[in-house]
Image (tube, rainbow, N blue to C red):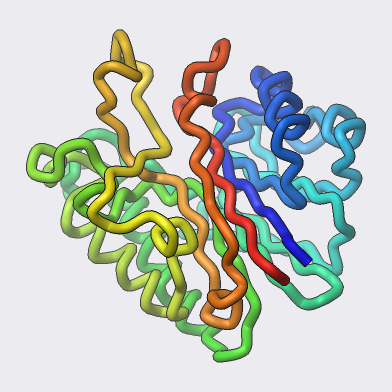
Length: 265
């Protein structure tokens, strides 16, 4: 039966819970994965999601920073979280379902502004995280694994995942060292890019637009930072994808928009 998963860096779930409710009412994915929730677990707006039909909620929260959550219409079989770079940050959740489908939700470090790990600890942290992620993927390699990996990976890997490839080669999120490392993550588990499966690489596609632009829509200087990947066992079941560009124009929006993928389980 069709199964829809959505990923969205909400940039404060308590501030934007109304937008989450609006999105769920209009699109009703089976599973919603949020990043940058920016709240402790006990302050998470659980009741609003339950009222919207999402009774099963897994949370990895952190006060004021980071944070990921998974809200589902279907019960979880297991819930796990890993500590990346031994920093204790809330950047990952893994859930499984009764049919052994696995969903991993990630919030990769943004990396700051200077793409030099020698002088920028935030960028060094990001590179270490991506290296660990590649090793993690390699450890989990199995040809029959039915897994979906989603999240704000904070890397726009392809030429047309950014508004200007040449200008952004020295900008954090599109530097060669980041795109190469994300490529290693992608290869480590033979992932399939579920969004680019439907949208050709030659076509511009973004999921993030900076708050700094006076008119984000007119400038259209976006990047595709939010991803949905599936293992080869799920590739033939892919049905459709959508990137909800209009959500960037909602009242008091996140700088990211929801990305949805539908597949047959």
